[in-house]
Image 1 (cartoon, rainbow, N blue to C red):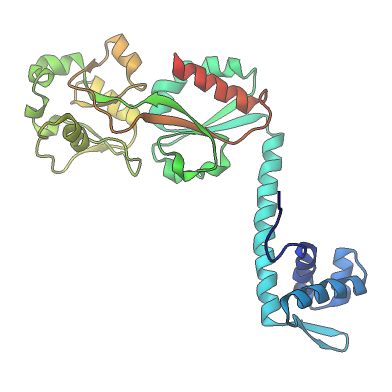
Image 2 (image 1 turned 30 degrees about the vertical axis):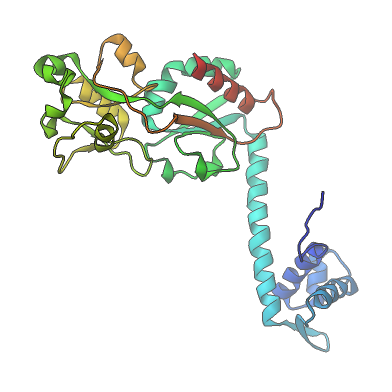
Length: 303
């Protein structure tokens, strides 16, 4: 395997010396900071000048001043190694944490995760799981969490993932709503548009009422201005109160249906194979807490 097959190969130490020399404009002060001799600093700079084919400093006796090229190279080194240092700190901090940070939507946390949360904690043997919730996952830097329940794995393509919930979407309403509007059972498209409750799906790509009607092959009511719920638990509460009819997702509303709090209506549709995935940091230790959590999710999703 070839490593660092690029123009900077073999010059990384010299580039670090260059950054210090540009910052100080002094060979002696650079040598003091780096713990090197002044001739060693000069040799590093000469090496870079030979490889680049140009002078990087203007010399006047013992004084040096960087050229424009040297300043640009030093800024690039600061930027690159600053990023490396930040990632190093993140990785080092992760290895010392006695917790796992999990991100997911309000709806998933409320309807899928929380009923099983005690089982998850028991499976992890006391390792703390900190859950970060939002229905706009785009607002979270997912690279800074250990795992996230997502509907789109493309944001972090280098992270592995497992499917959690099969995509299946269908209308839901309360028993009281159906008694008041029995036509919802067989002719949902005849309901007045103001009786349809909408979930603000943001940029998730999740299904909306117009998309559901299109996939079901039905003519939608004339939706104009609609009231959107920005958190799925609030939408579900409104449905349970009998305020209107909404869309339910397999995996999120199963327990409410089993309790009889809501009823499933109309045909179920799907525009993708999977609604939710668990995407996580790569791990080497198959017995570590993150690996244990991934295994727990796999088992819970298969039940």
